[in-house]
Length: 100
Image 1 (cartoon, rainbow, N blue to C red):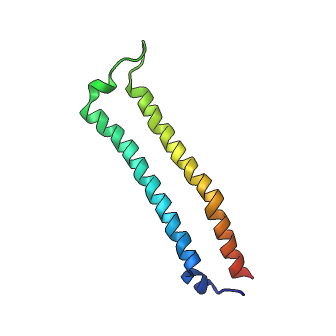
Image 2 (cartoon, helix red, strand yellow; image 1 turned 180 degrees about the vertical axis):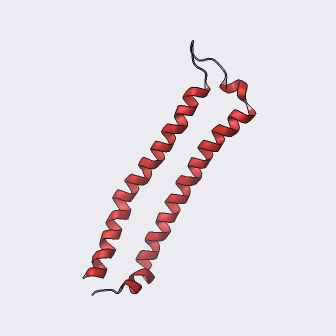
Image 3 (cartoon, rainbow, N blue to C red; image 1 turned 60 degrees about the vertical axis):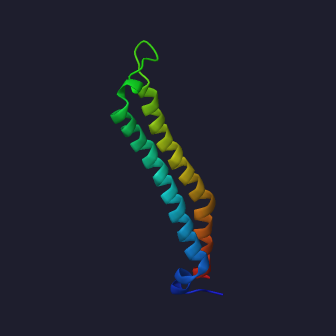
C-alpha cells in the first residue's frame, strides 16, 4: 500500500527514525564538547600539568591535544558508521513505501 508523504511524515516509523537521529547526534555532540572544552579548561586551570616534559622536545599537552583531534575523528566515524548501517537503510525503506 502506497503512503502519501504526509502519512509517512506522521508515521511512527518516521518519528522513531527522527528521534533516533537526534539522540545519536545529541550524544555525540555532547561528548565532543566535553572533550574539546575539557581540554581548554585543563589548559586554563592546570598549565603546569600540561607543561610536563615527556620527551626531549615535547610536553604532555601535545599528545593530549592530538588525542582531542583523534577523538573528533572517532566520533565522526561512529556517526558515519551508524548512518550507513541504520539511517540509510531506514530512509531507503521509507522512501520505497512512499514511491510504491
